[in-house]
Every structure is written in structure tokens, then in C-alpha cells.
Length: 268
Image 1 (cartoon, rainbow, N blue to C red):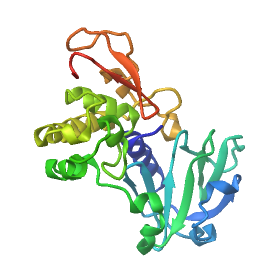
Image 2: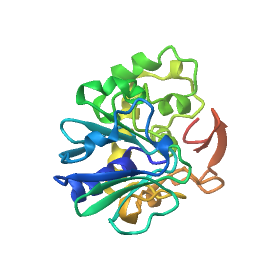
Image 3: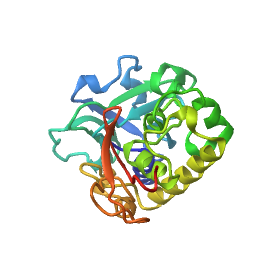
């Protein structure tokens, strides 16, 4: 699943290729890709794309008068192609610009797009509940959010209403870097450890953004650009391999139904 660094990589490439281009038409191949609360996509025709922003795992296409909000979910990707290029069977939605087309590709069909007015961001339920990203929070903020939670830290850090943008890969990496066991309960985390979570999250996310994200299984950014951060992972997908710090074997468990990797010595 694309996480914050992958989403930012996608947005960066799209921005480089699409800013100041005007929408000429669109095609909806899979009607459910358009959220039920969306305004009519006709409103985007003849509108000029002014900016592309990201919030957590959301991409927001800014046409000034209207916004198109997109969530890639598990397998979503954007590709830029020639207008006359044949449709791929997994391309669900096409936004045609005057000279090129933006294709939304999703094998699982979970992703959604929604057109809204700029002042109607609260109509996007996921965005309305979205917490700040690790770059914009303090240790006091995290401590207040988790100090009464009888939940494992792996599940807490995956909760986008507490911290936005961390998914399964990066939560494993952050907890390892912060020396916190994934099953430690939120109520047992100190304010000092909260600061370490922030510091390590920022460090890891910045490095992944620099490397274009993590390519595991199906993630590729638009135009087929793959990330390199998988070469820097410490524990994720490293079951039975030696820990890079202490040489103890990395273990794999399930936490909240999610595969979780950790070092039993570094993360007691």
C-alpha cells in the first residue's frame, strides 16, 4: 500500500508534468471509482490544474475553483500517457488534458476520487478525521493521544486519526528505531519515547522521500518510477534475518491482523 513517501513521490512527478494544463475531457471506466459524495466531474472540464498537494495518504489536485481528492488505497497508481494510447484493463478513470492523459490504474479497485469545492473538505470523511503528519506534531500531542490507550503501539501508529501517513512498513521501521516493542501498550509509553517516535518518524520518512519511496510487491509511482528505500529497511520483511544492530534474529508476529517485524532484543 502506498504510504506518505510514496504518495509524495507520485505527487511530485505528477506536478512536474501536469501543472498549468487544462482539462479537456474525462472518462469513467469503473463508476465506483467516483465517490458517492463527489460533485459532477463535468465541473473539471476547462479548468486549469494549479497545484498538487498531499495530506497523509491523500493526493489533492487543486483546480482553484474545485479540488479533486484521491486516495490510492491498496494498489492505486497514476500514469501519464499519450491521449490516443489504448486503455489498460485496470485503468478505471482518465482525466484528459489538452495534450496528455492522466490514468488512474487500480487492480483491486479500492481507490476513490472525489470532486469538491475548496471549502467542502469536511465532506471527505477520511480527510476530515486525518491527524497531523509526524512533521507537524509534538511529543505532548502524542502523549495526550495515547496515554490512556490500552492498545499496542503498532495499532496506535497505524491509526490515521492519531498520526497521518505512517503505514505498515514505516511503523515497523519507526518502532525498531525507537526501541519500542510493537506490543507495548500506548498507556505505558513515556513522553521521552514520544519524542523519539517523532524524531525517528521524521528521519525515516525524509530518507524514504529522498529515495522515492519503498518498492515492495506492487508499488510504483507514476511513469513507472520505482522507489529505493527498500534497500534501507531495518526489520520489515526481514523475518529470520540477523538484526542489523545486535545480530539477533528478526521475528514476525501478527498485530491487529497486520504482519509485524521486530527485533526481540532491541525492542524488549
